[in-house]
Amino acid sequence: KKEMEIDIKMRLLTTDLYEGAWLLSQGVELVSLWMDQNHKRSIIFEFSGAEVEHLKQAYQRGQAKANVIQLKQSINVLKDRMFEKLREERWRNTNDPSFIKNG
Image 1: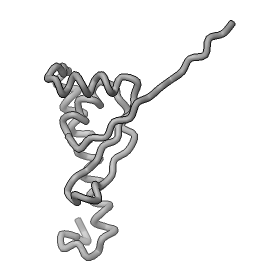
Image 2: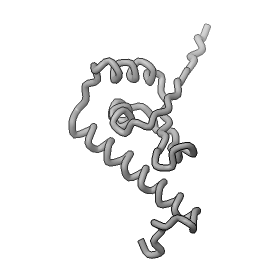
Image 3: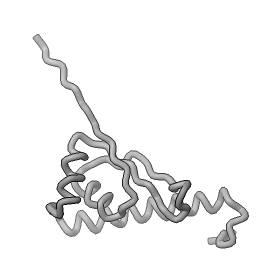
């Protein structure tokens, strides 16, 4: 008899860059990110993984531990993706006074 494995992946939304970077450094998948429509200067990161709830609780309790190099790389990945998303939003909104054609 073959047992069926069930892969349950939890999802987590956060606007906290450092929480997101820590989750990413722990192997949690970044599913997507988008602009928060209520707070135009905020990005919402969506993560998915079997351990995401446990890791979130560890982070919030101050029990998060990480390899500093991996954490720094994860921060850079999220910042790159975040600024890419902000540039896309500026392209869409030609009335944005901070829009720069060649920038």
